[in-house]
Length: 387
Image (cartoon, rainbow, N blue to C red; front, side):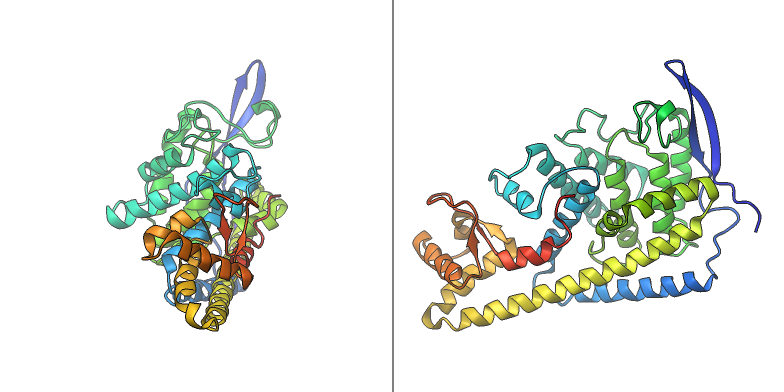
């Protein structure tokens, strides 16, 4: 196969120091990807089958919207942890209750913004018929950086200055993306590729993620938005009906290999090596999501059966339990508007759930108590502990 052209280097100078910035070639790669390799065929089939199973199980969930919200929260944590935040899933859920989390507020706000950015993107595509586009990515970026540590870094706008990865200057960096004057061309080609119908969706998602990371079009938030882009491509093409697949745990687990393969694409044109890694990640992440959903369904069934054994109290306790199962972490005042019960009745039901060790109290206080569905939270939190 002829040598694959991956891009060109642009020589520049900053503060008297010379550096080289990389301008990637447009996608798809030239010469074309060798998708006929037996290992890639097998990996793609495995990934497609896993995505099909994942898309199917969301239909079996009694309240898929709530499960997906919590699952997106977990993805937001993992994606932000890759970039150094120290939040846990319980921290985020406490933050959204307006309760004080156990970590710096900026950490939790950054994660909450990730959830808001994804929801905005999906809502625009579904309700407004808006295409996956540069404009949509800018809108999501504005949500992503709202009020957090990166809010001062031109949220919602493509950069107008040089950025870099690693090191204290471009001359010392491990990688320097395209100079700002090359962004318009790079991004125009990138947007065109997002709608290349002749490239299989999972392959397009794999290539688009690398290209976005290489262009690094914003001053901050590129990593988080680049990981969100994978799910957006899959949902935009209808491969997934719901945003139930995320690769951040896979990338977090294999961080060194992930970065080495991104570099190999840029330096050697090894798109096939990256694609094999990506497809393996798709299959692994999809299967993990299916396993998580099945374990949560089993847990709910077991706990509902235990509550049914309470006799006359079962009806009241069961109704309160369903509210806790929907939110995982909540307070008595949050349950009250959803149920035709008095606050003392709700508190008595929660006390019964605490006695059954289904629910536990997080604050240790006598007033303004916060309750968690601990076993559910533990399953959902697996792999989401801070680095």
